[in-house]
Image (cartoon, rainbow, N blue to C red; front, side, top):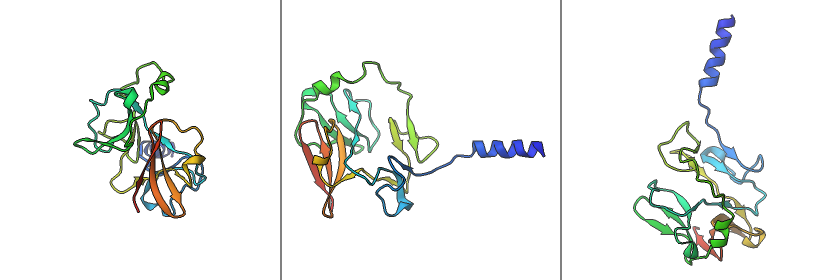
Length: 179
């Protein structure tokens, strides 16, 4: 009996578990949770901040989103579509002062958090690995509700049912409507 319990415990511990991650509260913003891998609290007024990257040459994973600080005086939020970097900021911003508060230590190049799978070949800090689920961005009713946004902040603005992706480059917001 003791051996069966040990084997059962071992199986439970080695079985990969896949679940949804909700940051901030139990509810999240998505009404239908079946296609959601990661989401944020329903009490908005927050954003997600993209990593500041000073050398994007080694980033080759399609879908990567960064605060491109290759030239700190002309920084922009960008995503990599597999061929080229696409500008989401429209206008450049000087984030030199924001870079001075970043930790001086080099990152661990092997550090990675994977959500949705036990491993991933994708190179990134936070990798959402799923073929059937997506991340639901934080939602706010107004960018004015986000106090002191950091360069690289992204959120969805829900203005009376009109939804837009809002991207902050450190100086100004850019909006991408998708409805």
